[in-house]
Image 1 (cartoon, rainbow, N blue to C red):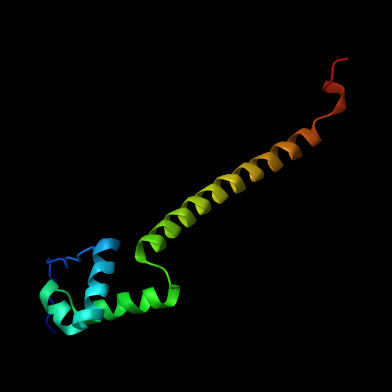
Image 2 (image 1 turned 120 degrees about the horizontal axis):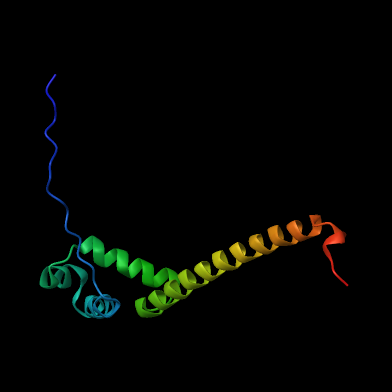
Length: 105
């Protein structure tokens, strides 16, 4: 059986700004998706996907990006606070086990 030769070429993915997506979709509403896709050099399916995401949320992409960033920040903050609570629980358990004779009056 032949061994498949692994390809070392990587797929390059373009990242488009929220502003680019909004402008492309606005233009697609006026001129049609196929024409805009051809003019901008993007796949029609990508424009349809962007349009679908915008319709689902009802928000422009810029607002979606801001909300995603805020959500990520809140998740990090929540994880930090959970770590602090776990530490404080361990500390409370440790000090609860300390004998009372250690106190100096």
